[in-house]
Picture 1 (tube, rainbow, N blue to C red):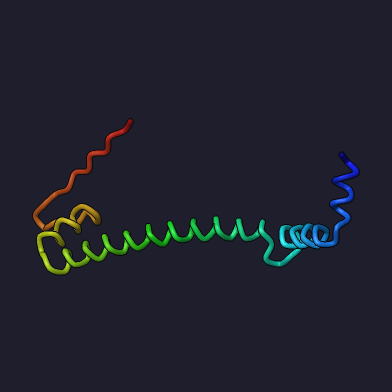
Picture 2 (cartoon, rainbow, N blue to C red; picture 1 turned 90 degrees about the vertical axis):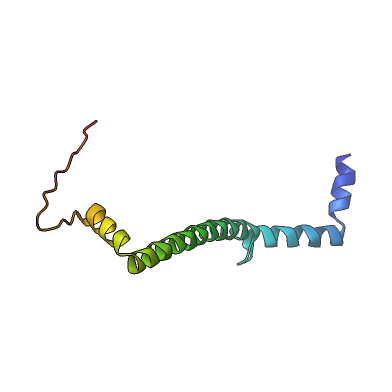
Amino acid sequence: MYKKIFLRLKDKYILITLAFLVWISFFDTHNLISQFKRTRVLKDVQSEKQYYLEEIKSDSIATMELTSDKEHLEKFAREKYLMKKDDEDIFLIIKEE
């Protein structure tokens, strides 16, 4: 049985094919291992791109609301930057867990 396998491995076409597969898998600059890693990185970057595109869309909607509606602008300033009118007092209630 081992003799049959050994005789088969002596065939020049099988040797060249095996050498080619080993070269492509490990030694080439664009080997299979690095290609799999690059594919994984590409998928991560594409998912980040999608996340940032959604964030840009929501921020542009918020910007449009803030520039067009004075009530939204006032609400945003009061909530985000704790701004107040001259005759008002602000009391912050911080809940400790």
